[in-house]
Image 1 (cartoon, rainbow, N blue to C red):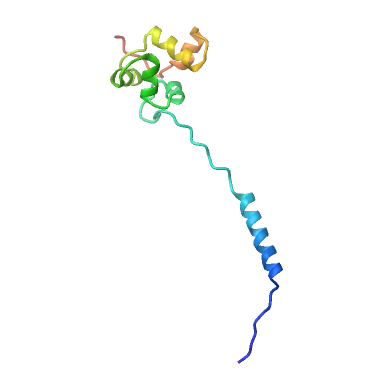
Image 2: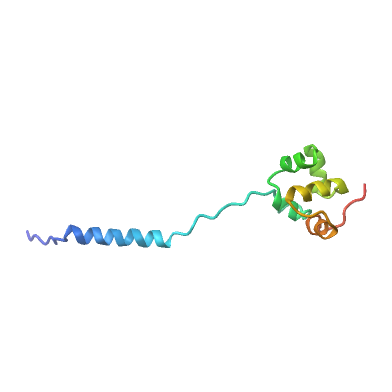
Length: 114
């Protein structure tokens, strides 16, 4: 039988492997940082609040309210009171004024009046 083996120097193989590894590292994208926030898709109410708070519990601790009350407010069934709006704006580090209230508490549809 014919022996048709090819001899490749180890240094050449190592160089090829190094180049491939460097190319793989260069082509890898940075892992995307996932921003945690409340669910946005189901309800159109208060999108800015949903982006700034991770959960109903966090929002409830800011305005001292239980999960049912928070859920009613976030769904637009009950409007936020002026005091609650002020507490939320202060928590977010924003100045309490009409422009910021409109920016953060624009729910996209008319609130029901309690």
